[in-house]
Image (cartoon, rainbow, N blue to C red):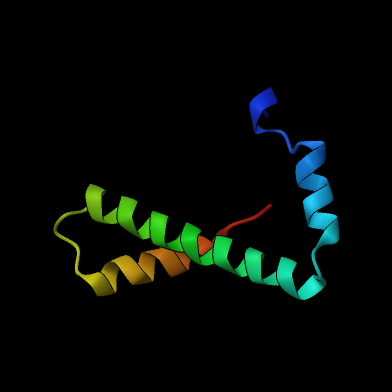
Amino acid sequence: MLPDEQTSPEQFEALRRMTPQQRLAIAEQLYWSAREMKAAGLRAQHTDWSEEQVAREVTRIFLQAST
């Protein structure tokens, strides 16, 4: 991770002040944003794919993702 990508002490403090529900809501927003970005990338790479094909591939990719 690059130095400017690391979490700052101020960011940690902001996260600590949040309720668990707020942190969960942010995590959910990040998840759906990541899926939208992956779908956009697939559409750009596979201009001939239908929306159904894009959606299936996004689902496949996220189901097989690992940490």
